[in-house]
Amino acid sequence: MKHARIAWAGAVQQALESDGQLLITQGPHKGHRVGFDEVVWLPPLAPVPQARTVIALGLNYADHAKELAFKAPEEPLAFMKGEASLIGHKALTVRPNGVKYMHYECELAVVIGRTARRVKKADAYDFVAGYTVANDYAIRDYLENWYRPNLRVKNRDTCTPIGPWLVDAADVSNPMALKLQTTVNGQVTQSGSTADMIFDVPTLIEYFSSFMTLKPGDLILTGTPDGIVDCQPGDVIVTEIEGIGALTNTIVAA
Amino acid sequence: MSHWQPRGTVYGTLLNFRREWDLWSPRMTQEPHKAAPQAPVLYVKTANTFSPAGQDLVLQDGVTEVDIGATLGLVIGDDGRVAGAVLLNDWSVPHTSYYRPPVKFRCRDGFLALPEQITPGQLQDWAALQLTVQRNGERVQTVDLRELVRDLPTLLADVGDFMTLQAGDVLMVGTDCLADGTRPRAQVGDRVDISAPGFASVSVQVGGAA
Image: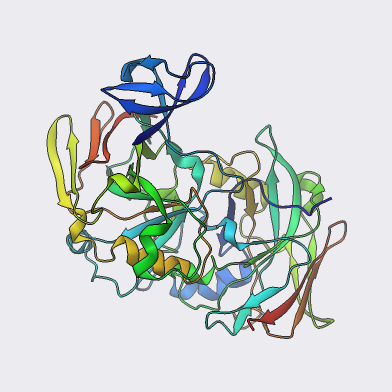
């Protein structure tokens, strides 16, 4: 099933994708259907009691590593983000004034479903609730070589669209063979496959859970392949992953 | 009543004491850094690091020694302004590279020791605060907030230029080093206490995994 969190009728609603509409599943509007264009899309993630851990991979596709002039890493290169940078589908992302290079990053996002500590690769999929699409924007002008990538590049308000759907893990037969694609104003600019990850999802779960406890609702953004380009105000960016969803975002000026 | 825990995301600040900045300064323009940092350099302490008052730090999974990171955390209130502050021990696995250290140095389970409670107040109350760090009852460091590179209002303003701190978030103002650039360390069996006037102390017994 494809789960969404939406704002509609003055409140936050849980919904499922059903025949090209949103079927509300809880509360006074349970059973009601609404169109995709009638709602505000929120990140498809239930609230969590403590700060949500958002792990993001810096370089996890060999071609992207090459593009950014890095050697392929020997262990996952990750950084942590705050939840406050997350926004939903069809939302607006702010491009700061005066910057030269702001780019999207289409990423498969893994949502943890069970508390995970010292998980072995072979068991790792048992700890996944589902998958969604994240667009982990970067403002490259602000890159400084201290605790890379520094948060001024990567943890900005509005700069992590995520959604539209949380797709149940059971409905994704092989998360390591999904096509990824980004379009800017309808033109394909990025194209790849999750098959080309340097560290696959089970390896990442084993690695991170070897030193930290992952909780339900925590996120792993698994990195992006080759094909990043600058985005200007007015540009419509669609990051899409086969079977997971197409996440639309529009850039606006500050 | 249960002890205080952060409601939001906890951010740490790198290189915010003058002594460490000055020690690094000659190397800042060299590879791989190429230039001194212009904006605050931050990192996240994830929720798995939160260790409420009274809990031991368990050194495990091959870690045998930790840097003590005595700091002040500014707690953001519901109106988006600082509502209070806490002493914290921002433990880390000792590392000398600030280029791209793996998150496993700072985001291990239990690596942020918390006090019992928050101290309400405002920035000017803490401008000259001194934190005392004791290991097994002996003072090993005094951290003086007058030595910050970015003082509290400047740090908040410079961070606010690129991200909005949310209600419940905590901004740690940085940890100082010793004269030789290292930080005081702790091993299994040590007891570490961080105290400051007007604040709930952070006291941690360091233990090993069975």
